[in-house]
Length: 443
Image: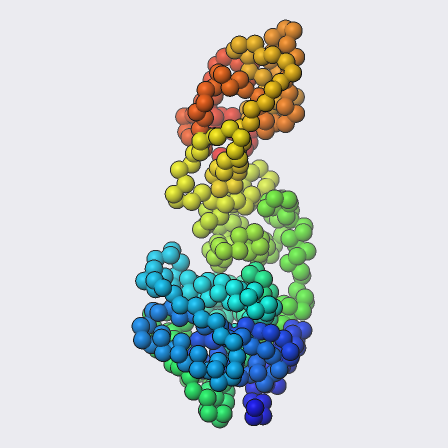
């Protein structure tokens, strides 16, 4: 192998700041065949890493996509490196998954990297993001109203929820330097025309915004945006700002719940940052942005029962608590048949179970014996006939009923406006909505 390329030293210095040394480390290298990931592969080899090449062929560009795959295969062969390729069999379905095409492809790519990392027992995944990519990312985040976290862009190294650590050795390197080095060492690469397409915001930034900034503010202005983001990111990672974990420990309760009075006492910018971080931790697949932060923050001043739905999560205000819970899917009928002896999932977050049991006392016809079911406040004396012992389940969530009286077919469903029930020990009925209002329970 020839002498290391001149990008090796800044890449080593960047990763050292994050405590990462790739020498002798098995690393999955995401490779599209473009100049950034092609040079990344050479860089990893020069740094002493043990790369495993991973490529996704989305088949969105026909023969061009297949040519990209062939180029990556040849590159891996030239370096004598193991290669994993994932080919999308039905590319037309990528555009109909609900998210944007770019988000969908990114999710597929990262899941594939996780599979390869597990198969190869690799702890790190290396990506070819550059200083220019950092500037683009920051500008996109700022245009969406991001705060400090978004303004700091991408990290040089960070853990991913899928079980590996992402590293970006080229994050401090301008793309122009990468192209120059590729030419110096005689490397070939593929060009993806869609990277410059005005169909996507990032493409418009590359072809319109970045050149305009360079013309108006100087040739170094664009790269300086990326450098500023890198400095801010290191400032955050070094803990010079108050720890997000400290705030989360202060406001969060058990079971995905937040104490509203404690959270409300914080400055608005801190509150929204904490809410987005909780969303990231508790609902990692849900997109996060400034409008979501505002929606969540708005619940703090609303009445009990109000909620904010976003993607597959619903956040509900229940008195002094914000509850983060799974939102019912669109194909969820909102009801389930109860099968004796089987725990039945219901409403995305609960399980219901009906079991047959024998009791040490008889139940007279027409008498309902229960613990403290919904609508029956704890501590209320239970109704029973003289001579019969009360049957107390010991739990407000468990009730004893006579199977001969209720019949074999039971269905549980969400309550609906107009639903009524007969409170235990009473003969008249009451609206379920009135019960929930009386109990100050979120509806």
